[in-house]
Image (cartoon, rainbow, N blue to C red):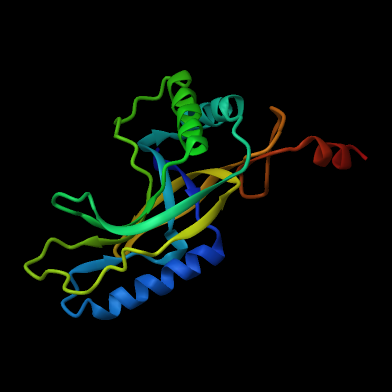
Length: 208
């Protein structure tokens, strides 16, 4: 069995709520239903789309991510909203401002993918949060997009997600979580079979 998967940065709930409020105002103006608006619980910044992968290959990738990820917590800025891409837009998105830390994190993830020998489709990395997707119908979105919206976002973990396609759109379920701090190489399973990183202080408590 294969799993449709991707690596991304989750958006903290408080920021997701604020972005959701902005998207709700745009949705209210979308009288023709030209845009399919994303549930704010699904807001994220994609770092790598993996496509359909076998479970054991994702486990190998998780081990490589554990080895390669060394970026500590940092902050990014969602600098503005924009149709994306600018030519023939497919999305309404919150665009991420230039970040050296984010670029380094992306390089670490790319190194982990290469080390795991996982074949993936290479895409140009333009970080953004998708708020809505154009339906490409005859109806065009006639509402306003507030271009001057800006949010500071704390980034403290990387998540490998499963993407489950449903009749109402994709649903995203975390498979592996990687905190952006100092951690060791030991993995453990929770009751759902998901991997999580055992930090040294947590391991000491378990041994006690």
